Image (cartoon, rainbow, N blue to C red; front, side, top):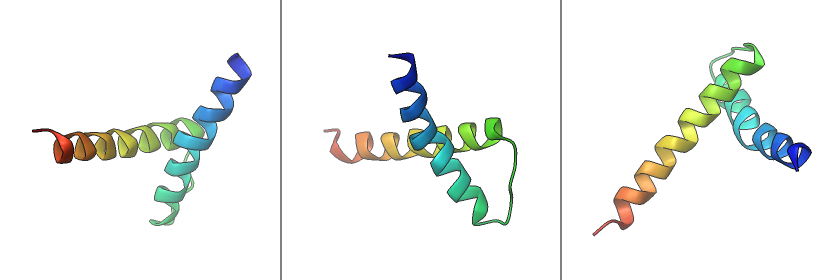
Length: 54
């Protein structure tokens, strides 16, 4: 179970953070990529919640 969580977090958060920061020509540490990806998906989640909230 721990391995599955690590893979999902790696693909979702770190992968997204890596792609976002690569747009600016940056190659930071994995922790920075993780938090960047997490912030991105949090913003997307809030936008979707706000769009479908009545």
